Length: 121
Image 1 (cartoon, one colour):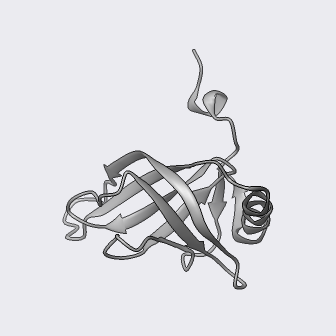
Image 2 (tube, rainbow, N blue to C red; image 1 turned 45 degrees about the vertical axis):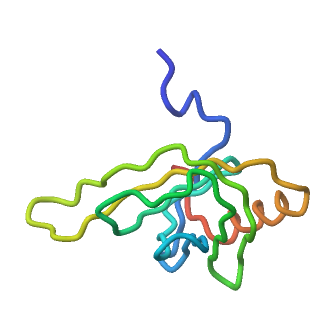
Image 3 (tube, rainbow, N blue to C red; image 1 turned 180 degrees about the vertical axis):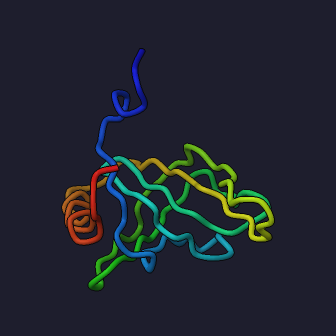
């Protein structure tokens, strides 16, 4: 049986700083970037219900003024994150797949991963 890791086309990298975030003009708030790869990203956000926009051009901001703008994405998954008993905050994890990136976006993505990641997930 194939594992999730076997099916992944790109390695995922954990983000080293909780100040890295993902945003979009139609979203009510920013999401905290959790991991990123050459194929997509995942972030956490606080909301009782999933945010809209199954496809969106996102902006990702990290350390040392590194950022990616107008990155085309498609929603892969949006689910509640178990936060433990008695927690009042609702946290969701949203996974996005990158759409077609131009050469400049691919180079910037490589640099962003190198600057903002700590380890392979």
